[in-house]
View 1 (cartoon, helix red, strand yellow):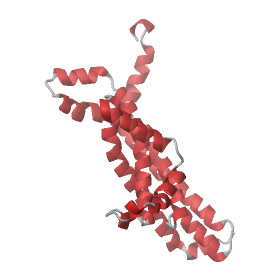
View 2 (cartoon, helix red, strand yellow):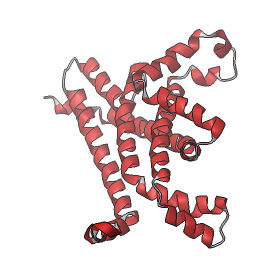
View 3 (cartoon, helix red, strand yellow):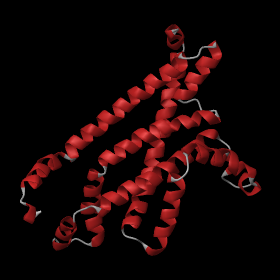
Length: 240
């Protein structure tokens, strides 16, 4: 193993880490902005929006991320109406195609996470808010969403890790992310393992950071569940 090549090309991998973090965090942020209203609409079965959201979620959850990226990057350019539109300066760039695809994909998965969290919110919390004289909008903003988002933290933490791992497909459309940096190193020096092993170690390090961050959030915002759950197990069956 020629680890001296990795050290000599540390800037290549540093830029790859920065690109991976950019794509991952921006896609998650945009996806969350998509998922929040969509998840609420799904949970409340809004008549017209519900079917459209179901179709959107099924489309992006039912197809591989790589296929979606190919369709956006290579497929849209085949239509004259797209090339002649105001969006073409954006859609012809690999970075923006990857970001749009990742954001839509993350939004679809996060929509179902939020929907499930909203639907499992105890009715007593909603009733308590209404009993205090809050409007439905205030109950949603001050009671329902904070409670649902706290309980969705473990599932959303998995989505963050999956999104980061899924971002490796960006390298197939010339984006120099972590995997792209590894492939460049291997091709430049005609080596087989150094670039890929370095990429694997960097992904493991980023995964560790994200997992620890979400564990910290869970220990802070879900600490009350650690106290309540044992008490529930001690209740007689008739009172459960």
